[in-house]
Length: 73
Image (cartoon, rainbow, N blue to C red; front, side, top):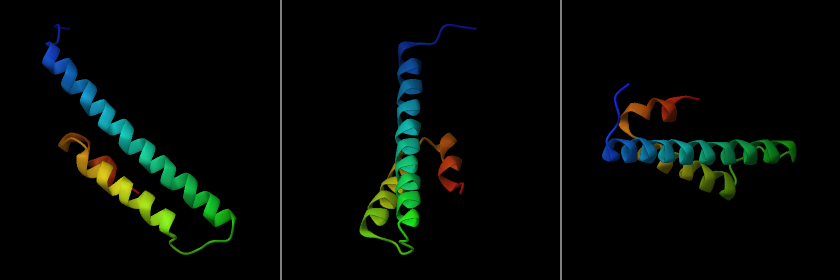
């Protein structure tokens, strides 16, 4: 395997950070949904909408090659 340039390594790190940000936003939304459902809340609360918007925003920041993650589910 050839050695990657500093720029390539930085790009790789940035892409991984953006993917991790998306995964964290998605996990927060799922956790909130589970808590609200367990509490008997079956409508979209302001917190749900805020977290959902965060997932959408994080998905838009994903590099093109990772955008399919935002389209799942």
